[in-house]
Length: 120
Image 1 (spheres, rainbow, N blue to C red):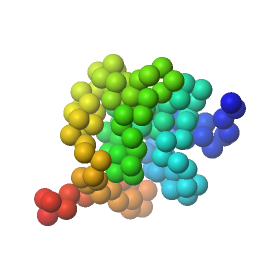
Image 2: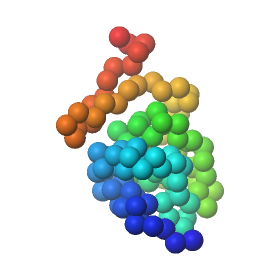
Image 3: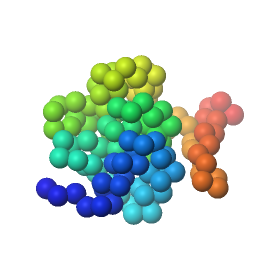
Image 4: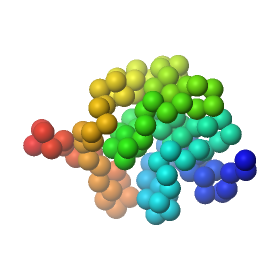
């Protein structure tokens, strides 16, 4: 299954931690949060978790990304993060309960984490 340039660029931007571009691409093109980025069945969450990108992992989870979704090799994003040594990502996924626990705001190209509703 060939992948189009948009999906390929999305994958590269995730790998290169270009969070603003990733979020803009997902939202402007209304892409499925579970879109497959490569022939191995990686989703944006798989790529972000593997790279240890906490900000992007939080964003994707807040948008409903399934942390238990398995790629073609049977690996979840959590498993990839663990394999890559990103214990903070693993802990984040372990405590995530499918309810958004935070909000992210994009201001002039910068991503800002806001306080959780329960901590305000």
